[in-house]
Length: 338
Ligand code: ADP
Ligand code: MG
Image (cartoon, rainbow, N blue to C red; front, top):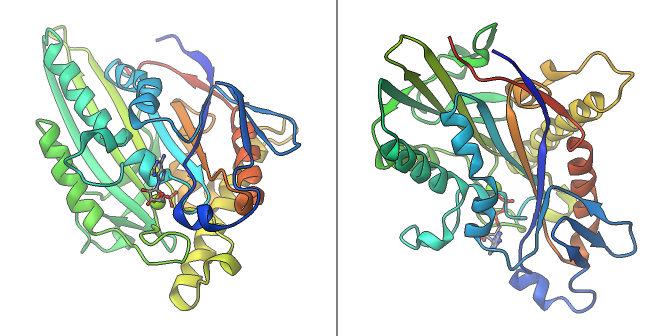
């Protein structure tokens, strides 16, 4: 099967000012959007991405831009969508959605992907068999927790690598699903087991990285098998502990989160430095799990998220620099067919 090379696709999304930011006096909004591919922060040169979504953008518009991922995964590609940004910048809003679940306009990429996947399958003239299975994990304090079976001992969950499967997680619960409601139910179960704590920045700030893994296997009547994998990743946010008021356990969690994100930054640096041969993927669980998505056999979309407010300008600039680097990473992808 022939392979092709493609860059990581990078999208920048900015949320509206929140109530706290609106109440602060000066320099409310420090962003300008000269066109749909760039964003300007104060006097800095423009940052250019595959697409930039200003604060007024809807969940619908964002999904419309990334929905080709579903065609790709059904076509037998490995695919990843992940969000990176400061705590409270809109990562979970973008991936899961926020607000009343019955209000479908607020749905994020995960429920929309799920819906589109099953409606596309229903419309296909399905010849052969299709099976879809789901796992849902979080990385909390450098341990992998099975969100579909929270009682499972993290020590029994191992990251493995094989020629045909690439990087995969052994020991996770894998649930077969028949329709979109099955996945929604699994997500609800998983979400209720996630580690969340209150910080000043974001009341429901998530303290862990989560990955929803959907694996689709399609058997044709001629016996060939096509396998696509969709990783939907909601990272925990980087945060300045001085700003969030974290202490005790919350401080320890913040340190681990910041450490794993800085190790992710190290991998991105190494990947974009032509002189570096060793990429330190094995330095953390997160980077190891994202290894195939960064320079491997995966069509990857990175969504960087930020606040438009002056008080967050340092974090926003660092997020934009992360996105600019990631944009130059090349993945070599092929359809997984046997
Ligand atoms: P993160 O996951 O990056 O820590 P969240 O997604 O939880 O941040 O967002 C923080 C708060 O901002 C939430 O209350 C969320 O509903 C709100 N928010 C984030 N992005 C948007 C957006 N694009 N439009 C409206 N509200 C948003
Ligand atoms: Mg979050």
